[in-house]
Length: 367
Image 1: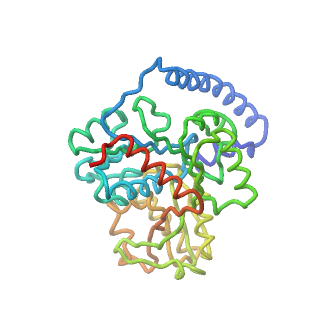
Image 2: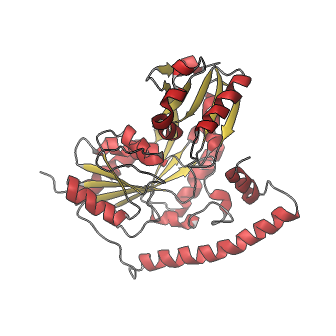
Image 3: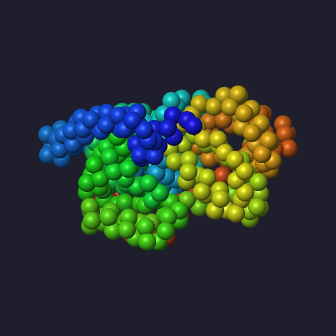
């Protein structure tokens, strides 16, 4: 079991015994201090006592209130595709251990910046933990009219015109506790700042649970646009670009691996295709893969009789540049591939599009 799994078992209450009880008590004490700092910071920004920096562009933020994967990256890609045909648009991301060059999209990109560069090939992806500096670069160098700030709900230094918050339906509120006792980055009441809430992975919970979650979100922010989405698999793509359709994955024996914030959601997606999940390896989020990792993955998959090794696009971007020959079909009869995902709306898409259009029109003069 990796460190993240152990941590989640601890904070969720699954781990038992005196040691686990003591650790949870210590984490709750630590979370009190964290909560005070976060609440004070939000209060100062809300009162205007700490000033946010305004820029000469429309700023749309996509973020969340919990740590771990909530499906923000596919949502950013969807948003870019809505905006790019009509405006000069750039994506701001802080990156994570990334060497992505903002001009070329090269130099060994990893994680979300690489995914965004691949999903939005014509986008200017600006990697900078300082979002204000990143915004200035996007405007000065590329003439950006609209800035999409990825994972920026807590980054309040850069003023935004629209806040869209993604909530993962499979674990929406981080066990109900602030970090480090839970997974909440800030209180659930912070949803009041959101202009729109997009509930992701709606297909992975029951209709009753989804209605309850929807009602709870609306209770915090009755005026927000609330949309429901799912992460729809499109196909599996191999290193040589060959694609395996969804129908062809049905009944196929698959070994899966990933290093993401919500591995369970990925595994459920594979099972929902009718595939036979013979085994899996789950690594910590943002895991750095080595040749030894891939050797272990292939060995485990072969032992279990898998016909295909499948991972996420996020993990794929980290291994394909350095280990293409190792994962190519020519090396083995057991190929590696990633599961391509697109976000699909079941409700609220038109309302969200209208909100985005109104926001941009209010900032950019129409010619």
